[in-house]
Image (cartoon, rainbow, N blue to C red; front, top):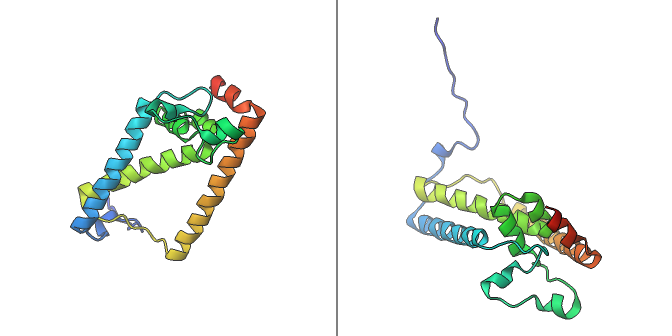
Length: 167
């Protein structure tokens, strides 16, 4: 009895991806360093139970718009979301700042991808045209604004504090 195997090529076959020049490896090293640094800081921070204010542990002042006008800034809760996400507390991260959770996941993916490029010396094939990149930019802008609106509604309603304490 003979077993015959067949090899099916994947459109994302990394063995066929072109090599990366030295500048590409340097860029990958910088992205990897930044990703690891951001995620390490997030791991060091203790998520603030209010769902915002975690950045104050870094010696930065409280959010001025929130203190002065009761209106959170568009990035309100990002540090808290990162601190929850690095601990695997994804629901708490989402409740603190949905955009922060998405950015934390993107940071981890960027770190893994840049580590691959740095170690393997090969590009990761991406079939994204410039027009698709512009569409992604617009989608990102809409998502940031939606996450900010969510944060405003939750803070003004007082629900974010209760939701984060529950989780």
